[in-house]
Image (cartoon, rainbow, N blue to C red; front, side):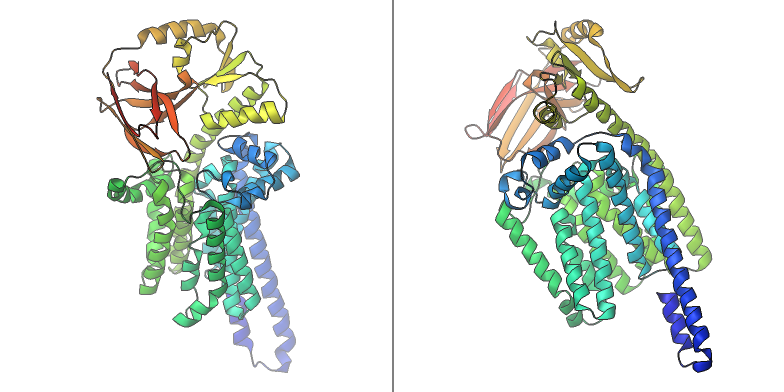
Length: 567
């Protein structure tokens, strides 16, 4: 504690007469510091509750059913040892290990899971506060931690249980930093070992923790050899993690989602900074950009020295670099490390200003970030509550019912069906479709009841009565002979496509006659590891509103990796 150490230094050699008073005053200083830190933690916990309390109304969304499926059907040790658990070359075994633990503690009650998720966000913010207090005063440290918890990217962390491993990686990583700094100051080998163990666990949670030793390398203001020596345990941890990853999934690097062709790399690199800024700004772009500008001002002040510029630049680069392979479709969770960097850099920079300027900057940052948070929360929570209500409704539907155009991702619906029918022994046969082409097929809807989300009522309701009119109107308006072109190229376990001849409009890949549908760019590629082929239709919706479909196109990646279809 800076206050206490300074006070002690000023009192040393004061003589026996003042010894009693010295210890009394020292005890008072310690108690005040404890009160300040306890109050700061309570404030951060309260802020998380106020900002994200509605999250406990949500249900299983996104990848939650898949995670539950694996956690229920497989031993928890498989996540650490079996290749088939990780089809996308990811290796985050602590994610599924955490799900096993949560299933034991909270069962299948999602409200308890969301409470634990909020507790983790509060724990991350509190740990960040204590880490910042090693370098700055109470108010800058508290503001930096609040900015992190209230950042627009954190809204998705409060509403998506599937990203719990990001929070675990951040919490473990920040604790590793605290242990490392204390180890260096106290010359404690045990704390160095603890820091390395925390770092190892953080990597098992999520790969974003891998670059952490680069930050630790810069923290001690000493010679090069001393810094390298103090990172010995962390180097062993890194080598151990990479070896373990290689032995399980056969690669050090992994990727998923949109594929990047070699010729696209320059364009992806050029667009990456702006995508990161937009993801950090959130749905309220204006106030989000204003918040980013304020944080950039404080971070810039932290990098005004040569050492500060070096540390800031290197750590920012390491925070951004892991985003590149998945940056074609930017998600808020991808930029959480960048947001963490911005909050820490801002707090350090603001703390070095004079009191008036510092306070003005802290207030401006807190105000703009909180407003940006509320705008992003409205957007994120609205989408998540729809998915939650659709999932709840599906769990109660019988075999005669179907969901029309759910917001739940198609792959998640399959896993939700397993959870309902196989694990919970619910009614079988309920279905869904993601494209109204399904209404135009040969499947009979005479005995089917159709349900869908109605935004005006904010609930899933039965719409069976209007389906015949909708089917006649939609199916009759399809332009079956409109010009259409599709090129497919499969290489390196990725499918690349180019649709045409239209430059404007919306493109969709439709599977199973409408049972699944994915809105896609006109020209793009997607990783499909282990998929031998596909049968799909291409749907085009013009800016004027008319629609056309291709016939079903059968893709065999082994026999015909390149295919061109046109009409």
